[in-house]
Image (cartoon, each protein chain N blue to C red):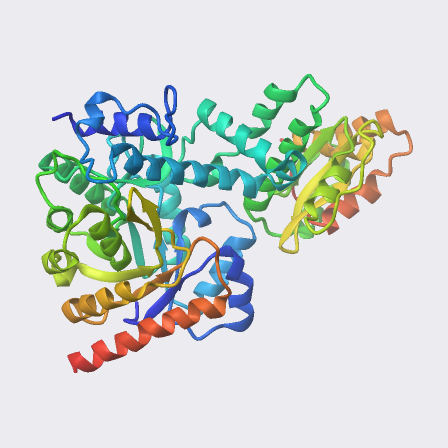
Length: 268
Length: 277
């Protein structure tokens, strides 16, 4: 009899459809495996197909849940076809199905990155950032007493810290409008002109869900530098480079109030 | 954990449970759904935990795999256990990964001495890592290995003896496997040491026509079948009143439907309590 490990390797190959899948959706069970299973009146292929089908459904359902907008944009049939191909290329490597979507944006980039549907990769990227934001760590509110202890001379070197749920996103497409139109499942989405300009978006968890806020080019540059750990003066300079009238104190106050910025440290 | 009926708590019902505080003895959640670093679901479950006993039920640890135990998964489970202080922690007598690939489906083991030693050692390692006993649940089976030298119930009892784990006995799974693999469910109940059984599961299954007969699939998407209620009563007669969970994972119904299913289990548990008295 094969070892436990040999049986598991053959079983996994059969239910993940390694090689050419048969009519039941299973990979060709190695002769070693087929001879090790009791066929009974239902047969080995039928029995293995239950596991294969369950495993595939769990995987695809997890993607549907994480990428509702991409699902709506491409429709059930094409989504399922692509999800199956993605699974063959990048099978799950975690016992926690919530991880399986991490590489899905890159899959869409490979599949449609250079054709007229290349916005799909951008939408998948936005949806995955949403998932990351949804499950990121919590953080206590901004401690103003900490700021009060900083001498005025040290402000330029202050490094602010974003809430762990904050994600910054940029696309050459009107991603925010596409996202909002297609997230509402109850009505036909309005047509959106893909050449109507790109979006810069701030994702942050607030009041129990993830909020998506449009950003100006300057705000995006400012927050991007904060995320990179730059000092406050350098963050303001990056924003002023693209908008000379950038209101640094106003944006900073708003970010603190809305818990986008939650901490600070003085550069040592 | 009270010897009463609980329900599987799914994300669709979190807000309603917080708002209405239903009269239910306890809740069980899938551990992996609460592995996140933070966020709303974590906060909601923590608030629910303040009012109800909780069981963490894992589906992804791949206890029977011949790959090394996954440290990241175990670390996240440990964090969830620390965070929610559950009364019970359980996993499945199954494997779901090998060679680094996960099927995310509960797959059957051959019931051999080799597998028994392997799984027993893995369960012991998990219990050491968590610093507590875990319960191990029998899965629904659709296939068996020619090389099995033990019955599934002998294997489960052997795993208990090997690792000192507890048993989460899924009554619906016994019924489904008995139908698909042609064995007597009574033999299963009779072989499990009563002292080890600390939780029972009940769920709905689906009949699928196949080659002139019907295969049963453990779908968790329907009410508990009458035949499974009958088997549950026989389980209570053998094991006494044990905390019992209503599981429903697909086509999830309104919370009131789950509570009504739990009430049916509670009525049978009350009878078991009365018999014991």
